[in-house]
Length: 267
Ligand SMILES: NC(=O)C1=CN([C@@H]2O[C@H](COP(=O)(O)OP(=O)(O)OC[C@H]3O[C@@H](n4cnc5c(N)ncnc54)[C@H](OP(=O)(O)O)[C@@H]3O)[C@@H](O)[C@H]2O)C=CC1
Ligand SMILES: O=C(O)C1=N[C@H](C(=O)O)C[C@H](O)C1
Image (cartoon, rainbow, N blue to C red; front, side, top):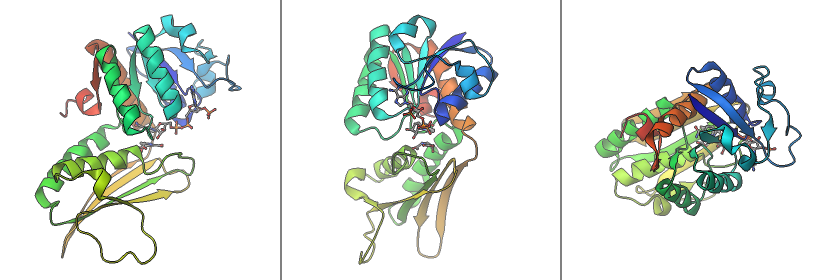
């Protein structure tokens, strides 16, 4: 049995993860964490998630519930994730991180925690997106040098970070295959007299609208044809199921820094 704690328990992803834990054999909700001052501290996490009473009160202090879980799943904000990684290190707990908008330095600190605890960090926990990453490697190798490459992503109106963590990872994968540095070749949106397109750039377009769960398209445009590799998520359960699977996987792995390619055996 894997006992899971959920950070950001009252958030969109936190509630969905609690729902998936409730529906999945071999896992149980051990603890639920929310930000200090939240009106839901002390409330039942199952009731807050809409699945009925689970007997787990939402806490604002990981230290106080450390004996109740094996793996923390964190879908919050970078500032909270960085505090949670320290707490997990302190208490010897594995962690699965889905939070996006992390800086390069923050990602490096998270990976370094893998020296003492199990860490899975991935901007997208869906099996479909992780398969898409492999297709992008193939497409970039086959036509990337000759193509104009554009990455288009769409998410709900409440999303805090842009471009999405997934689209940035897609850009990195394509750039790596082409021997380019994404930091130098990325163009984020266009406006004004931009002139003709520089062939070596990778463009990003961001849409924020309505309740879109998460959509990503990478376009490889050539003369006379174009290839579009797309993924469209229609339910947050696809991410939540991946996160729960990662929690079970990392519990049996021990220390190390991993991503969903490792969890899904796609490396
Ligand atoms: N890797 C993946 O597969 C996916 C990643 N994501 C990412 O997950 C993150 C969360 O997304 P989403 O659920 O939509 O966002 P929400 O804003 O709905 O949820 C975030 C939750 O974290 C809470 N929170 C903030 N600070 C803390 C803290 N210190 N301790 C505990 N909880 C805290 C927030 O509380 P409050 O609102 O009170 O501030 C909120 O309830 C984003 O970075 C998003 O991009 C999303 C989907 C899939
Ligand atoms: O905030 C979201 O909702 C999502 N964020 C992730 C990202 O930034 O890539 C993944 C997913 O598309 C949903």
